[in-house]
Amino acid sequence: MDTILPTMSSAGWVTNPSDKLDRLLANFYTTDGAQSVLYDRILLAAPSDVAEHKNDPVELIGALQPKLTAYLEKYFQRANVDMAEYNSGSNGAEIIISLKVTVFDSEAIGYTAAGLVTKKDSKFMYISERFNNG
Image (cartoon, rainbow, N blue to C red; front, side):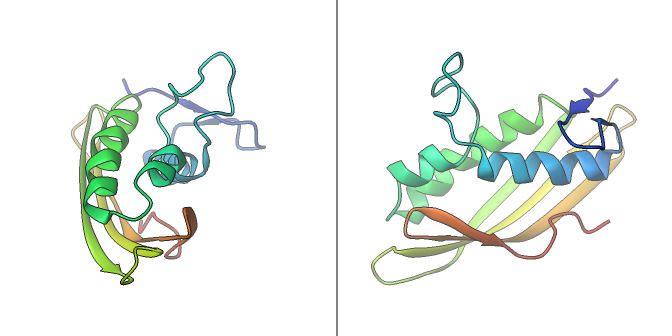
């Protein structure tokens, strides 16, 4: 059985795999690793890696890919995360990463999300539309 995702929204406990994947990706890119005293720097989240590797897209992808895979595998049976540099500014101030994630539930049904993630000046500015494409 897959792990249920608790939320503090009116959705409550999210069990639908597509919705769960969408929320997990949003959480991964918006959670600050230092926002918890109890789990200081232990949270699997992207912003601390962005600050550390802000001008090097290769190192940033190298840090994010295994972390995102481990994060998603806490909620799904298996996760495949493919990241690649899509476009970067000359000084590294803006980095665009193409992301394709496929997760598999307990019945081996795959759910895919893909999009472009844009980092500008050490912050994630936007993610192309909604991750979840159905």
